[in-house]
Image (cartoon, rainbow, N blue to C red; front, side):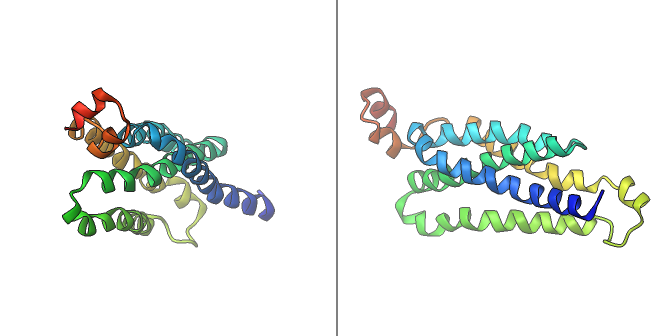
Length: 177
């Protein structure tokens, strides 16, 4: 592999998730009108196979997985704050709203700590090939996605009352009350 190819692949891997996030956030603005809880469930269901694809030793699978996972993250960045805003009681909102903002950098910090488990930069090729620690780092979001999915399916059983009231549907209004 030439230095040019390595640079190209590094750029593609680095930007593929950002592309997915942009598409997810742009489409999430429209999709959130169908339900915040529903969108978070869809995002988790999309994100799990996306993360799983990144664990294959194939460049195209890695790129596709990062785009799909990025799409999932973009959808969550739209639906998550709206869900918190609508579900949390007003007197607790100023305390709980920053949690969503802090969760992203905290997750990134956890992944950076995982990088300490990787072999050093100057490690011999054989040590790099034998080390599968990167799979734990890339696979970690599956745990988070599964927890989100379990919470949305088992813990929160309806859309937020505010969302249901805004739907202007008599059946939804009964559920919200």
